[in-house]
Structures are given as structure tokens and as C-alpha cells.
Length: 144
View 1 (cartoon, rainbow, N blue to C red):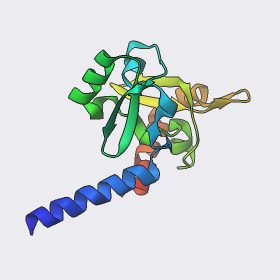
View 2: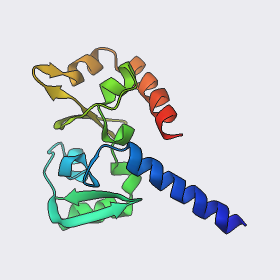
View 3: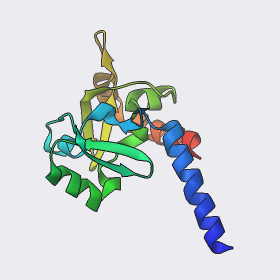
View 4: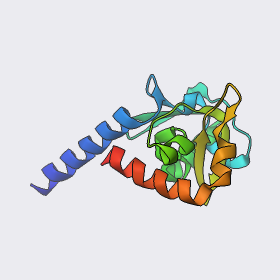
């Protein structure tokens, strides 16, 4: 019985992730290497260097970054499923991101919309504490 409950919970978590994460053809971060953000140099990953974590596939610029990710995937996964942090805080909406507009806060990757002269990272920085708290609450409603 316990095994059945664990299997069911894991299947539900996987479904929530694939349904609610910002993915294109099951690829996260628009193909960018999640580890590269922590070196402050976002790089596009290579299709031949990939790793799938809980049904979400990440690409990596090099094998060393893939190894780092595999050792601690939750450290490198983006906040709010890779959606725009500002929009998640402001309205709770899942809004696309510019993969090169980001911020690392307390060791976590946050991504932002930055198109047509609207860089939401600037708006986020003006009220980060409140927006982050609201985004955390809004994301919990989405993934419950």
C-alpha cells in the first residue's frame, strides 16, 4: 500500500511539473544551461548534452555543468517553473521569459520577461521582497 501511495504521489508530481513548467518540446530554459547562470554567463546548451530530471529536460553547454546539475538538480532548477518571476508575483500569471534576463537570489535562479522595451527585472528590483513573497504564494497555488 505504501509503495502504491509513493508511486501515485510521484506520478502526480511529474504531471504537475510537465503541465506547469515553462517548457518547449519538454526542454526547460529555452535550451539554456541552468548551471551557467550561476557563473553569471547564461549559455545555450547543446542537444547532445542533456539530462532529464522528473520529466523535465535540461541542456548543458559542457559535460562538467551536466555533472554539477545531476549532483544537485534542485539547486539549479529555476524558480516558478522557469516563468517570469515578476509576473508570478504581480498577477500569478505564467509569462514567457528572456532567458538572458535573470537574477540569482539566495542561491536560486529567477527569470524575467524582457521584450519590447519592457524589462520586468527592473520592476522586480524596485519591490523585490513583496513580489517574491507574492510569487511564492501564487506558485504554490499553481503546483498544488
